Image (cartoon, rainbow, N blue to C red; front, top):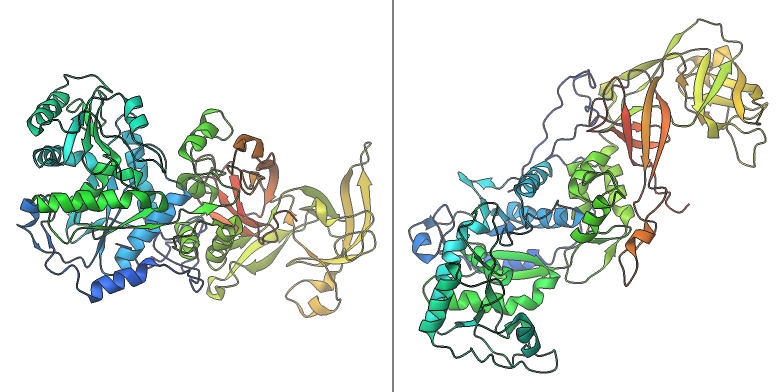
Amino acid sequence: MTTSGTSPGKPSEANPTPGVPTPGVSDNASTHASVSHAASNYLRPIIEADLAADRYRGKRWAGHPGPAAAQNQGRPDTARIRTRFPPEPNGYLHLGHAKSICVNFGLAGEYGGVCHLRLDDTNPEKEDQEYVDAIAEAVHWLGFDWKADGNDNRYYASDYFDWMYEFAETLIQAGQAYVDAQTPDEIRANRGTLTEPGVNSPWRDRPAAESLTLLREMREGKHPDGSLVLRAKIDMASPNINLRDPIIYRVRHAHHHRTGDAWCIYPMYTYAHPIEDALEGITHSICTLEFEDQRPFYDWLLAHLADLGKLNRPLPRQYEFARLNVTYVVTSKRKLLQLVKEGHVDGWDDPRMPTIFGLRRRGYTPAAIRLFCDRTAVTKSDSRIDYSLLEQAARDDLDPITARSVAVLDPLKLVITNYPEGRSEICRAPRNPHAPEAGNREFPFTRELWIERDDFREEAPKKYFRLFPGNLVRLKYGYVVKCTDYTKDAAGNITEVHAEYLPETRSGTPGADSIKVKGNITWVSAAHAVPATVHLYDRLFADPMPDAGDKDFLACLNPKSRQTVQAWLEPGTHASPGATWQFERLGYFTADRVASTPEAPVLNRIVTLRDSWGA
């Protein structure tokens, strides 16, 4: 079920004022940004119709998964619906998984239901406890919980291996499954095509007792990998190729991360998945669109097991929605693994990666990701969502809660020649313009300042209103100054700009409006500024569809996806890991969760203030 409510921030070094949003801290469950742009979800009318028809009346829940015999001992299910998020623990979750998490947990919370976290660990060679732990952490970080009504609804497909095997024997005994001794190539060739029917296996009419004996031998490890498979007996001439006697068990002598060497046969996902749903009492099994063709087998299997007394009705129903495809992103686990292994990125949590941990390290909040997912429709039509929608969700979430500050990323020395040496005075600016009660931050104004190099021109182009010889600009929150001179080094690079300040024009005083200027620039005191390493992150790929067609996705990498600069920060900027600011005129930045310390800040740019991609 979804968590709700916002916890007030506690005073800390990074946030010493109660009531002021702590930089970098966004409560997992809070939604700071408006969700008025929520997109349509075709599943809502389906769920509402099911509830109106009281389709699940009489459904029982024993407090844990189990077949009909176990559930019959339970009480009427208090959950109006049950959904599940069923990742395979063979990699780190990414943005596409975040969409599925939000859909499944969100709908369960919206309709008084429960969402299970199920680790679909039926493929022992690719799964690991590392991924199990990472998946649970990612779901919690996004703000969702699988505990409800005293039940810890975190389950593993491997917990159901005994039941799956029992059901397989039952299907054999009922004449609905058989052991096939064809080679994998023969099975593939005899399956037919989309226009030609398949050919019955010579073992299709093997006596049930013989198939049962062979299956038990398979389980006992008496047959090598690839020698035998168990197939459902449906229809080799079916127009749906997935109903042409699909394989439901194969021999696989492989160590499992949870069951060890207890099993040497493992169920196929298409067999395991519907059984898992039924054992857990799932009502709405929400999958991505590639499973649509598998739905007839899903229904066939559950109906037969219910007829055989192994499962209770009403049975789960499967519904599909289109994957979340985002421009400038790849989410293929194989390609993401390649990026990591070949060193194109610095691990699974590299801030350029679309993994949930990469997005977290980049500085995206749970609320921002949920907002993005909420704004993308749940439909059955494939489409690509523009990456800018994700960036805008971050801005909409961070803008009202993030403390303001100033940073200079490309520093140029500005000397106020008529300001007394050794003098310092305090300037003030709002901590957050959306929260006046948060008060002001304070920082010193001195003779020598750092400004952005781009805020000065020797010769100003038209409509350039910042510093150039003879021009007046306001140093934001400080004084109006007039550029008087500049110096260069031997290579012709500008090394220093000189200006004179107008003493009666300080911000917040009656004389502040005495002189009208068209330009405002930000600055920090050179004597007090905090040095920092800043990573300017951008999109990992320069091509909006890096994995489309036959493209070499590595050739689409953006060479400027990370640029590192040495910057100066406003004094008082405490870069505890995870702290977040809006640096005025520059964008939103966070202190890196891994590399940053208050003594040696390392900051990541989350997103610019506005969409400037391609500008």
